[in-house]
Every structure is written in structure tokens, then in C-alpha cells.
Length: 568
Image 1 (cartoon, rainbow, N blue to C red):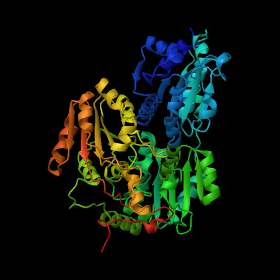
Image 2 (cartoon, helix red, strand yellow):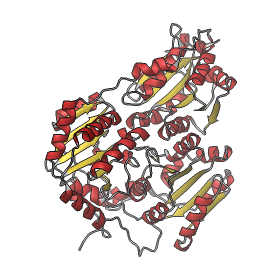
Image 3 (spheres, rainbow, N blue to C red):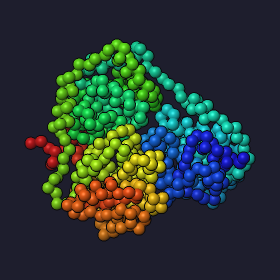
Image 4 (spheres, rainbow, N blue to C red):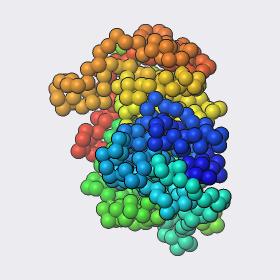
């Protein structure tokens, strides 16, 4: 077998049924071998989208998405998607064609130093050479991407190495899986220490991050809160992990977090954080002046735990998988009949959620994104998965939509990449062909990977694209309103183009544009009920301001609720 065939056979051994790719001369041996072994190749409109689709496949499943592209501009086009996956801890494999080894480092057509470009954007970069076993590289990379703090692995595969004869040994994938399956458990003393801290607290608050975004972790944190009903908040990447309908589930924290969550963090005396990055979008952080609560921190990333230990001095910390730690804590709680006395805090949290609901200008002449999300929230079912682009529509979706389960709200968090929604929806649909996939986008974000409308139409994928078109990059416009006195440099995008009509030309059987509020509810219902590729364009108010918001550099007590949530 040549090494391209060994690559394809390794995919088969790993259970990879499809890859997302874009062909070219230096990757053709791998492409033809992948086809020869019966693996589907989903061809996107560009290489960035292929990598985003592979990332969407990972985000919506327990598998590792795979992208295969050619050399030069093809692999550099994937850089943004790789960095995006790295920021959100998403497992991803990207294989790139490369010129022959003897031509690397020269002015050969479409050659580039992949290792140096991707070094800080990927979990690992591998340049395959003639001394390496391709089967071992592929199978090891698959489980490396999933292990510890998950992330993208980039494999640079020179053309001559693809064609060279190699050895295939049919090594069982379990050998590589076991290499990375080290499990750290909480000991009895650690469990006792944690519960002593929890029992001492009068106002404990759980903060759930994307590190728990799996069925296993979600199951266990839900079991923990069925037992204790500790008031809980979550990050953008943590949506769907908890039962968001619970009285104790207060909502998303952050710069654009919901009022109850941003208020609760100001009152807690014990902040229990699972799988979070302590990033700037959560604004002021526990441990800083004004938020001096005790901290307990669980995370699989040793570097992050050490950083938090140094900066925040947590009373308790654990490096390891959250689901393992929660198993240990639940077992200890059962064996020792651990109880909490936080009734007063629970009552306060319930009232906080009840009395501080989201709202918007219900007398507006124009359709608002907030009202579209409020209507859509009544139509989202248990088998829906949402992807979003980046912008105000992303935050309105995160605020108003109830996510029923882990991996059901798929968005670009740490990197905030416009153009994410469409290709991620393609990957999510292939990962969950029986679910309803809704791609929510803004006009600015949609245009970034507009060609994926063609991909959806070409493959007749039942992806539903909801475009909230306000003719502007309105998250940036909101900043310009506040900081630049309404000078909209670079954010005006007024056009008469009907994206719905363009979608119709690209194969969307259901395609409609809504400008009249009277048509909105019925159109949303028909959009959700439609079969095949569906596109609904809703014209929304360019002057809509996203609330709540915390001004840059301010704390949670400076949260601006806006004119329609402020209390008299």
C-alpha cells in the first residue's frame, strides 16, 4: 500500500465515515484513496468552510471531524477554523497536501511552512516524513485531538510521501485511545474538603463552561443539581449543559449575559467553576476587587488551573475530567448523606430569575432580532440543534433560546469568528441527520461564507437558515453609538439585494423574505415545518441595541439593562 491508502485505511479503522475537503494537485493521492475506501468527501465552497464544517461535526457529536485540503493557500485558508477550534477546545484533524520534501523551503508553487504558521493555533502540527509510520500518526492524532484539553491537530503530508510505499499493521485504535485515557479521581479527603467548603457557604453559585459540553458531563452536573439545586449560571459555551428551565438555572453570564446571572455573581460567597477559561467576555472575574468570593475550580487543563491558582487563589482546585470528579462527589455525597442549608439563597435566586426577565421595545415599528428569538424559542424542540454566526444575533440567540441538551447550541465562542454558522451547520447536519439544524446568522456574518448556501443546496441538506438582516454589522455599530457618537465608519451595508431570492437560486425550495411583522409568526412556523433546504430572511431594525451590556472595563454592578428592562 502507498501512504495515501494507509491514511484512508486508518480512517476506516477509526470509524471515520466522511471527511470535509477541497481537492488540489498535492492532495489528490489522498483524495483518491479516501474515495477508493468508500469514505464520503463533502466538498465545500472553500477550505475554511471545510475545516469549519469538520469542526461543526465534532461540536455536534462525540466524533472527531476531519478536513482534507491541498497545499499553499488551501491550508492557510483553514487557519482561522483551526484557531477557532483551538480557542473552544474542539477536537479536529486537518490534513494538508504539501509539495515534495525536496521542494520544501524553496520557491516551489504553493509551498508554505505549515508548522511555523500553525504552531500557536493548533494543539499539535505534524510534518510527515519518510521515517514515520502513517498509520501510527493518523490513529495517534485522532485520540490526541480528543484527549485532555481537546483541540485541532494539523498534519502536513508531502506529495512524495503520499505516493511512497508504507507499512500497514492494522493496529487496534484502542492502543492509542488507552495511551491518552488517564483518569484522575478525587480522593476521600478531597471530596470531604470540597463539601466542607460547600456546606460552609451560604450563597454558593455554580458556573458551567464548555469543558462540560458532553452527554456524560451534562448527565452528572444535572444529577448534582437535582440533588442540591445550587443556583447556577453558564458561559456562552456552556449552554445546554444544564436544564435551563430549572428555577435555579439563572442564565448566561457575561458582557451580554442575562440580568439574573450577572446579578447573582455579585452576591455569591462560593464560586464553583467547571471547565471555564476565565476569559475577558465574562467581564469582571471572581477574585477581583468587588467579587471576593471563595473559589472552587475544576478543569482538565493543568496550565489553566495553575494560572487560576496563581491569580485567584482558589480554596479548592482539581485537574482532571469534570465528569470523573462529579462521579466521585456524587458517590461521596450519597455515602455520607451530605445536605446543604441554602434555602434562603435558593429563594432569592428564584425571585431574581422571576423578577429580572429579558425584554425589548414591544412598540417598535420595525421587527427586532430579540422578538424573532423570543418567537423562535417557542418553536425549538428537543431534537433541534442551533448554530450561529457572530454578532448581535448570536447574543440574542444565547439570551432568549432554551438549549435542551449539550451540543445543541453550536457557536464560535473564544475566537468569535464571523462566517461560522453555515459551515458549522453543514457539519452538524451530517453528524445528526435526524435532528433539525437551524443556522441563525446576520447579514454581515452570512456573507463571510456565503458560498455554503451553494453547498447546502448542492447536497440538498435539510438545513434551515434564519437570516436576521439589519443591513449592518450592528454589534460594532452599537459600539460606534456609544463611543463614536453614531459615526458608522465601515458598518453601513444598505442594499436592496434579497438574500432569500439568491438562496432560491442555490436550491432552497423554501425561501422567503419577511418585512411585515404580521407575517413573522406564520413564516417562522412554516419555515420550521418546511422540508429540505429552507431559508427565511427577516428584515430587522438596524438601530436595535443589544441589552443587557456591561461597558468595557466596568463590573457587573455597572450592567446597563437598557430602557425596556430598567426598573422604576
